[in-house]
Image (tube, rainbow, N blue to C red; front, top):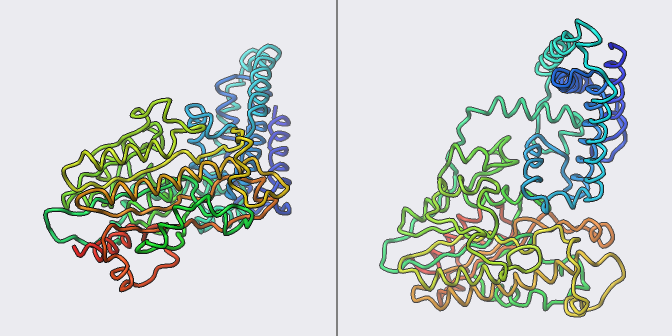
Length: 505
């Protein structure tokens, strides 16, 4: 029995050393990495052994789970340039509720094969291996011994844990995959009662008047300008963006804390004004903390000045706990996918033009100043699940290059709709009696690994612009300091400053 446990530990240790989590050369583990790995392995072994009463099955299960974790880390790093971290465990349950968002990136056939093999293995071990209590009267002691050793290893790891930079790639280079999970668990434990400081964003106050301008902020899914990286993309893809940029009061590049996914990181930064340093370990999923400990936000600030605050997001309200978080962040109403129909879909998700219609209706129906925060979905991957129309390529490329273009062609088709949405919202705001302003930005670049590998990667930034219906917006904007490169947590403050200057309120 002891030999089986030691063999399982050795196999996992070799896997952890031989397969570098960020694709670099293998390295020997340090004391902290060894203790963390032993604590994790023995804890799961003790639990599996206690539940199943089968020694060899428990050893095999933990080794296999370690291998699956390594494979998942490889998949995530390949697509998102970020290793698997502790908060990602909640995505396993999300994958069951929203399989389209996750499983295609790992591989549908690979997932089915693993599930089938897992079920067959469980059945085979249950049939062939007798329970411990039938083989050894003292078999119950094995889980207790393993848990005791695991606790000792965890204590040693705790005392020797490294200081984290909270930059996952940098940290995992220093610790390894399992040790990084252990380190993040320690950080969450230490921060569990920490109350986030109120955001430092000094959002300006508007002077009271009868008609405040309507405000529409759009977080456009996976929005970026591919023409800056790929010269073969047609200018017409973002023709409305170009036209609006000429007339915009401000614009530039947004420094976003996400690559390819994790929309909520950019979203929380924009809405709360909290920097990554202020969020600490909660930067990886701020809403998990803000749901219980809300802070002042852009919505609460505007609601205090008389605005009705509405969020429009055409996806299930419970995703990222938005149904809990957005009300405590100051939103009076949350319009989710239940407000849309099958006819509103464009590709895999509700289309941007259908969302624009809903926002336009809100602007036309309101009798008070309105702040609408829009979170779009149309551009969301996995893009490789869609087959673009054959005629689309001739419309989105000035010259069609050779290479893997399916994902990019699909993306550009949806990007044209985002561009049309911008034009529709600008026109809708301009048509209102009190006028208003539109702030538009991308949450992150899209996931297109084949395209990036062949044609090159874009920067980890997205474009933003602020357009205002005020006739003197150019004069007012010219008096403001230029912000060509803006961190996501400073965007809302800058937007309100531009609005205040343009509308003289």
